[in-house]
Every structure is written in structure tokens, then in C-alpha cells.
Image 1 (cartoon, rainbow, N blue to C red):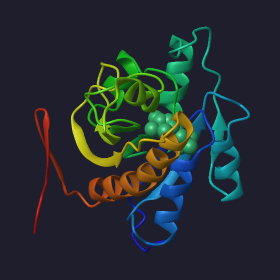
Image 2: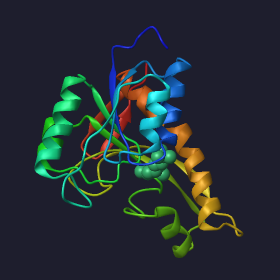
Image 3: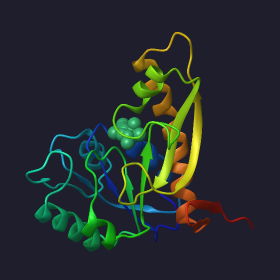
Length: 209
Ligand code: GRF
């Protein structure tokens, strides 16, 4: 762990949690001046919760309620309360498969980031690596962006490219994008924790010096 752990992260995920692991490892290695204050998931058996518990980090399943792609009102309130109780400075979405809406966004305006497996604004939505392959692009990658009311639509913080190879399948391309995500996300979260990120409308600028 680093000496400066005052910047508190709340990580939300629904899946295996490899981006969470990359972030947690980067914190342990001292590359991100932050601590993980809580990990929340809408999937009781999600790998991300198991990964967090293995690291003795607070991890909690919060039922998402009756909808398939978003949180219902009660669930949304429960997520907001849990994140406020953990006094998080930044919410890091790491494969959280539900769209966040009004009250949640208002509670943490400008303090939610996401990683998406394409070079946005190309290929928002599901299976972005497959969309890239089907479209025949030669370069794709991943994007870290702020979260707003649109789907994969907020201001872009940074991107990393991944070449599409002639013999790529959806699985091989997805694996290389995932590897790129594990480099990009910790760098972006570190820059935010260090206060190096300035948002000017759609443009996100890295402060220097
Ligand atoms: C990543 O591909 C990310 O881009 C997307 O969800 C996936 C999460 O993977 N938003 P993991 O759970 O971090 O392994």
C-alpha cells in the first residue's frame, strides 16, 4: 500500500474483475495514490467480489432490483448510500453491466469513470470488440471516460489503441483489448487521484508541472 491513501475509490463491477485486480495491484505497487474503500456488485457470485475479499477489502452484493439493464429506485438508493457511507471520492466502473441513471449520477456528478473496450465514440454498447471485428476496422482499443447520462458517452479521459490482426477472432481481439485496459485504467485513475485531470466541456486535459 502507498503512504497516501486519502483518495477513496468505490469500485463497481458485475464480472470477473480483472480490471479491479489491475487497479488493486497498481495501488499495492504504489502507482496509484488511493485506496479502495468499497467494492459493490449487482451479481452475488461475481469474481470481482471474490477478488476483493481475497484482498481483505470491503465487498458487498447489492441486489439490483426488478430491471435487467438498470438499477431500480430502491437499489439505486442502496448503492448511493453504500458509496456515501464509504466516503468515496471517485466511483470506478469496472465491468458494471447496468446503466446508471438520474439520482445516482446527480449524487456523484463528475466523479464516475468507466472503461469501455473500443475507441469511443466508435462501437458503444455491448461486445464492442465484436462490433470492431464485424466492421473491419484495423485499429481498435479501449477508452476511459467520465460517465454521464448517455451510454458510453461521457468526456474521454484517455484511450489506448490495439491493432486488429488478420487472423483475429472475437476471443483473441477481446483478450488483447483486455490487456490494454489493465494498463490504461490504472494510469487514468492515478492521474485523477493526483489531481492532474482538468475537464473543459468535452475535452479532458492533463495538467502538467
Ligand atoms: C471490460 O472489458 C470493460 O471494458 C467492460 O467490462 C469488462 C470488464 O472486465 N466495461 P473485468 O470484469 O474487469 O475483467
